[in-house]
Image (tube, rainbow, N blue to C red):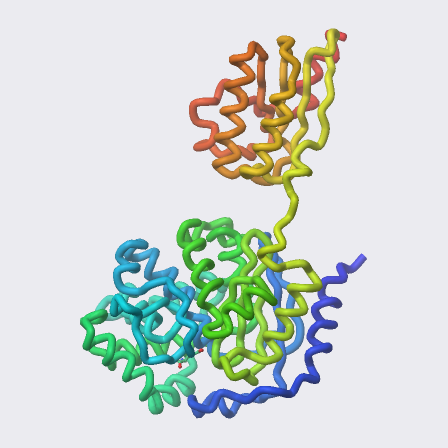
Length: 426
Ligand code: GLU
């Protein structure tokens, strides 16, 4: 059997191919040379599989899609508080290159140019390694290959960067930035000129979808708290003055770039990247928006749809042993707050008789910290009621940190093996 996912993606691409509306960005002369017919789509899963179709090996400049990653790198380098003192997190409802500041005299958010230029100044740098080079290395690590700058697009934008230069001077004037505005704006433009394919973007977004861990290598590249901050800002500010429209129709945290790319991240599920150079009046790729709308509605990817996952937490409950007083709970799925609440309600209904209760975690795929805390609190209360309780975790779903202080309650044997002792007593 061949999975139908690539066929489906190909189908979505073909369906959008006829849409000829929009216009190439022409304020950066080199971008006006792009082939308007190019079209590509890639989707990454949180285990690192990448499906792609169309012009998926074509490189284009990352442009504003670099902004969330630059923000992530600034947060990683300086911490949240230091960054918040320089750039806000409020949607601006303005165009990406608006020459404006919030009432507090700070750029409103890191997704519009004033915030992104400020963020660029916060990137790590040494005498020999520029801020843009630091970011290029970071993006290469996320993409899993060495990315390069596009010197032509860079030179072309620098020549016509009057508006961004004004923003730079404005930031210097109000004291948000101490550095030489020309140097910072040029560095920001270089950051925007890094070349990517949709497959690179899909790999990069898979790290964000996976809570900061590179799914292929298992290496943590970003703290979970940073990923949450970045995705929140993408959700509210990523699509500029079309942010509300995007949230209601697509509902996926996303960022567009003026070369024609759009990338989106659905936390815990998928990363998506599209490329098509013609833009709408907000500066977002026309066919890119259409593809996202289709994917979101066809695949139920809207963030606000949610999933009633709690209903699946209890796979089965049965009793064994001579006196049928060994009660086994086999759990499955993900243990977060809602699932833990449901599990605790089941356990609350356990008869007062002094039973031995076995909680089998083998088929759980993930236990969040809140899930582990609630689980062990439930175990404690069952024991206070006089039950004997054992947690079977043969696959090691609980982390060492989560087990801390409860080690004696956890058995790493398989459920079958552990239960054999009771079968013999029958
Ligand atoms: N380099 C572009 C600029 O600053 C990025 C804009 C965008 O991609 O939206 O004007």
